[in-house]
Image (cartoon, rainbow, N blue to C red; front, side, top):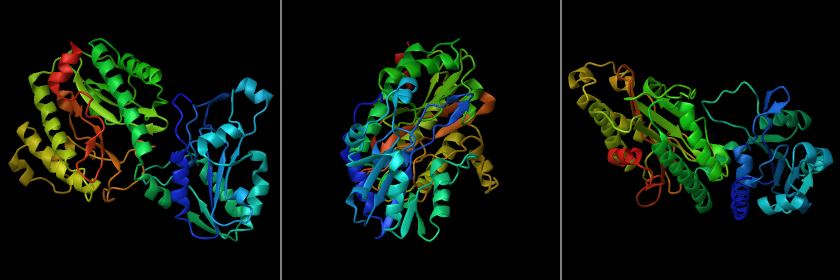
Length: 428
């Protein structure tokens, strides 16, 4: 892997805390991600299923993890099964994990080839009554393709119909919400790489460059700093493109006088950063652009203070919406009288700020956790107010990653330029 080795205590502790949540006579079964077909005989670049990585640190397809609470055969209490390599695989695909390597990475003592899985599974099933299966339960995600945990989980139900089946996802969500010191260090690393990429962008962006040219500068900085790549599809949106919230075409020419909105984050060791910034293509904000930018910046600074234990995403969204509404009135987008007469079900601010301010961050850019989750120390979330005025070709978003602590929140991106003066100076 590109990233530096991770102390396997991270994965050992994750499994230890997970098994403590399981009832007696249980097995939890986890499958690695699929290699996803691209076209012809090609696959997309492999990315491990987040829960599987969280528990093992293993970044390889066709892997299976068994965690058993009670079994006489102690060799099956915590077991990892791997694809057995051969000369042909080594020639055509390259290196695959040895048992020793997998043990060192994961901290799992008992590592077997996948060929041994079926026999081992039958022995485990004869010793337990509860089976915990894992699936991606993100509430707004509806993929057409069923992932490996889903498919093989259904097969398992057919093969062993007399057991009691349960969900691992709620247990893992409970664990993954609170980041350990090791996880926070990995997220910080991703943030630091993102910082380097943004500074490179400030030094190289100018009128006439295409959005994909600018993305190439980011890609370069990610690669030379050992990032896996992007934690999500990057947004490089100039001019009116900045008003498209999930614009990822990145193929238009950046024009003199326009703003360009960036939303990107490096993924390091499968942990991602998530940053948004908005800069003038020519290096100088116009008066109107400054007014709009500073409106978002003022809200951003106030919003960061809300990231404290006991708060929630829904509470932050409500407060930030009110703050942005006041700024929009100052900018002349509508009046106080308009607000009094507005449709309460479709408030005026939503025309110019239509997304939420926060989401959880970690192994996934939209990490586990819901909007009513009460903040606790160790959680990491984004803070991202925005303003979008299509008729003026103005789209502005400012986003940093915030760590909740028992004291004041910690901005993990505080070193990334955000003030207008700092941005303009670096663009000279």
